[in-house]
Length: 276
Image (cartoon, rainbow, N blue to C red; front, top):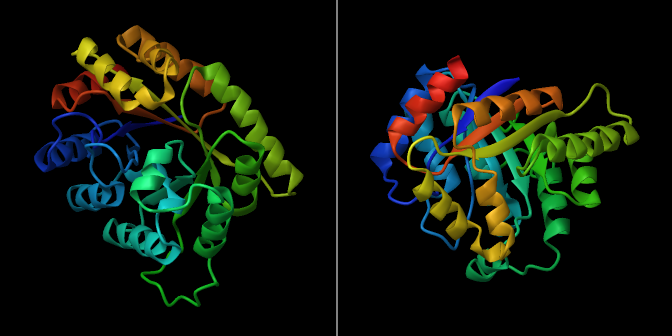
């Protein structure tokens, strides 16, 4: 199993210099990917802008959205943004897409929340090529495409259009259940092999209280469920190692650990754990 790390694009106090420092250090470390989250109504950086910046200071790691909310963007613009990052990074983009869970993001973007699943399916078909007759460039070939979500429709979209599945987080047993559904959907469509399986989690090895406070704020829209997210925050080397072991045993191909603090020392701490 490969291990990636998230850029601190949604954590309090992040600026451009911090993002570039994280990207440089991750590229020089034991990580296989750099990933970003996506949200409109929050003090955070745009995912494609952040990955473009990371592309300029990295040359090895894959750059991933885990996930970007596809239906918030016009389809051609989404394709243009993704293809641009892919080109700027030397063809290193993994594009994870889903419908998102926050209605307020749709309201702020003046996009109808209803019908978002259908629009995402249309976007995936577009991204897979042919519809625009290659008029919207740069070329999109080589972009690894993931689909996230927990509904039956999400797994069907993944199997029909994508290269793999992006899980939204949780304990290894939750990932194992989702992976089984992804594999089943893949087989049902008669696709050869199996989907690539990506997972994610949160960690705080320094300022645990600050990290927990960030998660409470970021997931406040879920109500009491936010405390379950906080409880799952990985706050020790032992917890991270157990988490890695559990995901690997569940068949995960790429596990991304997202920071809950922008302090670059957190990346140093995680590097020690992963390298060991």
